[in-house]
Length: 272
Image 1 (cartoon, rainbow, N blue to C red):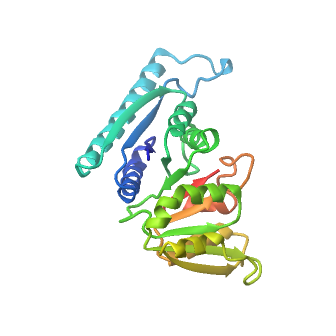
Image 2 (cartoon, rainbow, N blue to C red):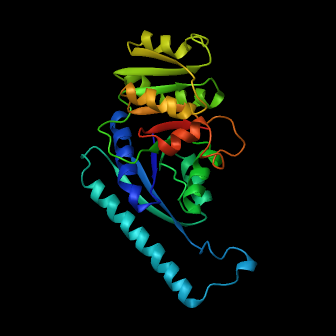
Image 3 (cartoon, rainbow, N blue to C red):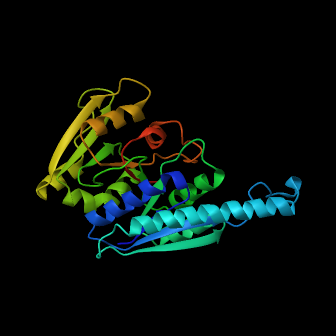
């Protein structure tokens, strides 16, 4: 098992590292590789129409990139000092095309942890997310924006049958099989319209307590309804598929998956 954590924002780095650490604890302390994908070129000057940066602009850009890397590296070392002797973690910085860098690294990881997307993020943050989810087809865990005492002890599956959810559940099996309880949230148009998922009985056969939570979809904001049911269940990891859309990131702030990515207070394990 290999865990990759992407650090690309100073203000969310602590929660991304904490989430990676909690996942590793649940999985028996596999090594954690922490990557800072640094910009190599100034994003304000990417086409001939944008001209060339002045020496002063180049200097400011280099200082900004260096200061960000220093802050993230310090956050890593502070977090690393809190780890047990059984938990290995390494820091790596790679400058270049952020999307390609993250995709390449995520292809060699079993789980990639990223910070929660926000509409105000710079373009390179969206590129990192795209590299992991789109290009590498990686299993992604989206870290929340606050501390969680545990991650994966009580997974909640947001049931919406799809190949993406099947892959997310497969990736989540180590958490599901070790869980104290697994909740399955099912949104449906009519009561009991959706058959009980086969995964429920499979987990019961392994001695895992399974709770089925059905609700009739009452609004167009299905993402918010799923989020509320997951929080009410007391879950600490939401497992869901990134619904089939040609441009997942562009759809980031509309639809059930994106509503949850934008507003969730739970870590989210997803697959596209």
